Length: 234
Image 1 (cartoon, rainbow, N blue to C red):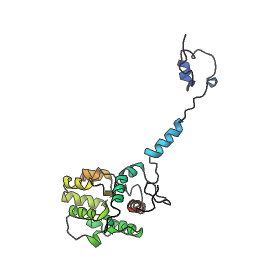
Image 2 (image 1 turned 60 degrees about the horizontal axis):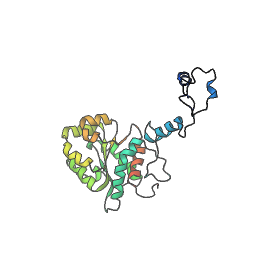
Image 3 (image 1 turned 120 degrees about the vertical axis):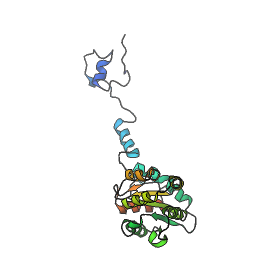
Image 4 (image 1 turned 90 degrees about the vertical axis):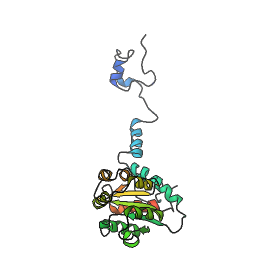
């Protein structure tokens, strides 16, 4: 005797019922079979998945303030979480700037100054070449020095910055040591991470923030939240 292939839940499709050895020949409507009700409906599952892991959906970060309206992509959360953890470990260290801003010298009065001014307007202390870095100092040495005296290092990646590091030929071995510290955040502006990877695969392998996705003001707000250690979400 043929047995129904869905004795408890019913057939979810007409083709499934037609192919069943027990039910396929019966002359009764599909609606007479019980409806399958999953405890995790397919549509709800997809909604939860897309909101938590991709598809461009955004949410607050763990370190966001209660009243924050800034939202992050899942990729940004993954990228910034280890950096935030290091910020929290270094929170009680004295005489540290919040941020070291590394940039091309030619950007110092343009986008680098814009980002610097936005950060300082949000109460973030910034190590900035116009005030703190000696003219002519090697880029890598200044990055290392700035990181040692700051909670987070920001690398403002622009077309001019790409040209500079390409000409100077920063050693992958030395740059790798900096990246391993989880204190470095690339900010791409008027370029892409793909362009960065062509010049510096190690730095380009680190995700960061982009002014293609957000305005410079929103990028500054995210960096401000990243370095602040008070009034975070539980």
